[in-house]
Image 1 (cartoon, rainbow, N blue to C red):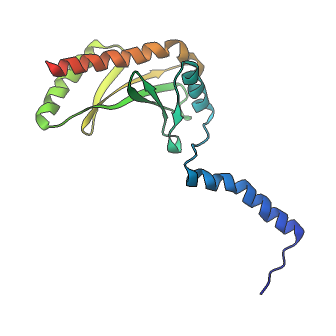
Image 2: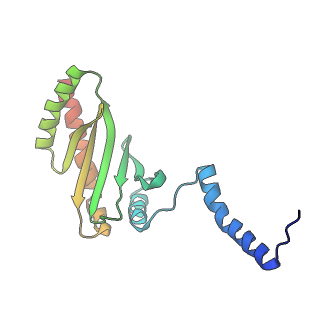
Length: 163
């Protein structure tokens, strides 16, 4: 049985295939997702500051390196006035005895470091800064200070753990 397709139907099928091909190739070839408007703001800011941002799959955040560590800016289009930077799993917790020590040192660090907060997530310690901002474009002037706050808390925690 041979199907006859009109020129109009053939053109429609061809156009549909051409339009869908990039989407199919994107998942097959591992091409990064297209950033939304808020992600573009933060990715541009990171590039202007000299970082190489990478948009994570399914818009889970923007990954970038800072002084040897991997950080993630979490972005929510539903809440563009919240800015959240995560320094995930920088200290593994290797025993229950160590976990007890970690809790006491985290209390000390969280009391002594402004803005950055440190916490246990599964079997590791992570740090973060979460802020309310009036405009996402306003983060650039304080971004370096945000990162220094996380670095200060990280160093304080590591030194406290060595005591």
